[in-house]
Image (cartoon, rainbow over all chains, first blue to last red; front, top):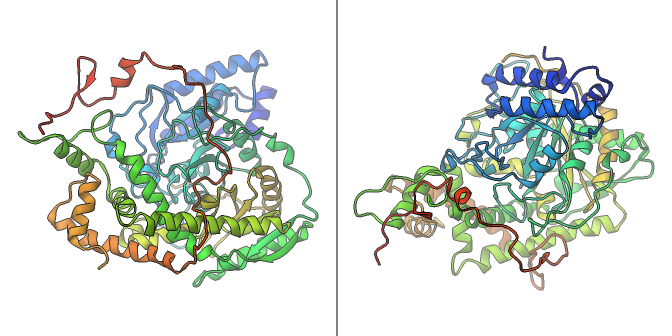
Length: 495
Length: 95
């Protein structure tokens, strides 16, 4: 057992089609691995009965040859996606017991394509965090360990459960969401591939909102090919999301196994930040070399407003969050705090929110409330939106000059130790997003590919940022980077 | 301190979050640090720059103004912490 769960989506699709194994065998293998993974704390819930029902139907469809790309493929779903009849809390106490009576558009599309849900995955509370430590379920733990130290490491965040579950072969792939790097950073920390699509590519309907102008869902997978497959099934216009864009969804797989001769790869000089570890610098140079030897042209580029991306993000994201999270008031769903005799509705709101939100969420709501409050709105929020425009313009100019994709490190370090996050001040934690937030602010697609390891054997990733709607080209170049890197996911199983 | 404890109290009230006395000083420190970081934005020349409100140049999709969903009072109420006779129930509001 445990062999089938190691498969990629592409390999499992092939094996199911050839009849080498059944969907129920594949699903049971993933369920077994998942139930034995308590120490990783990757799952909030394992949906075994649902999974077996879905797998049985998948087998029937395979027998009738009416199967698609995801028929019988076991996936993990981040706890931020509303799943009908299955508890969904975005890892927050305030949503204790919330059971959606509806299904998010993306998960519905996945089930329509025949996918199987293994369970709901751990994350930072309301996706606010970079280490998975703000979850009401407790931290998820990275399956990777340093060679010289057995201490528990963070899988990253906010989609930490997704990263850990895929890297540890508990499921074949997972969904994630990315507001400032929440797919790409955990993908880098766990040695897998994570893709944030162009804003508007995937419907946000039924995904618990954090910062609506930045949030995008995307695939977290073992290979670039799997990201192409899963993205294809997640994408598409949805009338229930007013910012979803009417664009044809290309066959992303058809972009793979192509050469990249003549493609222009931009290396932004502003991403060479102070104090960047040598290993990250070396990884970046090696990545560029690999693409060059595959025929691409490497060009030095400038994105002059990069240094303002983090402060811009940390105005806009909390401002939008403070507005989105106003709905958690103890009236329509979730947990309501008890009130004393004589206390009215205002006390009920305040106690419910004091009791139900964790420290980081409260901090962000308060920062956002401040930035939007009378007298500060122009100085913070409007100014941040203007700087956001300048950040987007930087990218527009670079792409107009013929650059196809931009290559950067995904994170400024490898996975760090758990509990380190708690000692750090909130700002230090925010610096994790330094290379990833720009793609969210500009609405661009970006992918993290594992390309190497640090000196203690921990995975490191490189990020490729593409043009709007350029996921095809992005995957094409990521595919070459993956093939040239020969990254090995050799995790010693300790759980 | 950019955000003093009175400001913390005011913002917490606006956000409808109860804050205890002993949380006030740590919160004012944390929020001030974050705010100082944000103030780097005042270095940027944003003269004549339009604020970005949508990353994709597009008009929001409009649909026909017709009822296309509804009649689900049970589902809407099923997650309510308190309900009564088909309504959400809240503590008494006396103004």
